Image 1 (cartoon, rainbow, N blue to C red):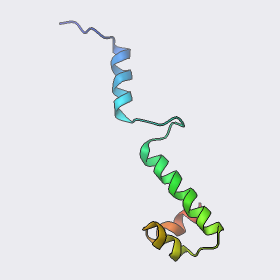
Image 2: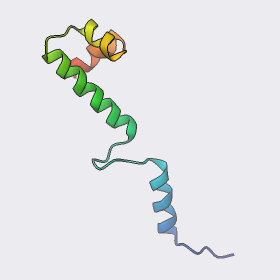
Image 3: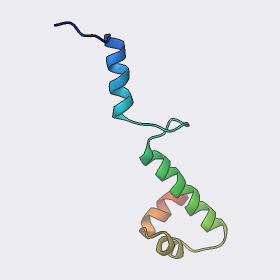
Image 4: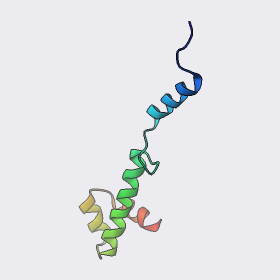
Length: 70
């Protein structure tokens, strides 16, 4: 039995399903992390403490600290 689509098309379709990416080329998880880091840095710039940021965003204080070091 012969395949109707070519090998290149098969792999293109497979890759499209495997890791959907946005316009910038990031996966949903990568984009969410980038957004969270921006939010943390903006709140820190406004003068909030790490503990206040953690409570506001519902994450651990260690996570806030780790993202501020980057």
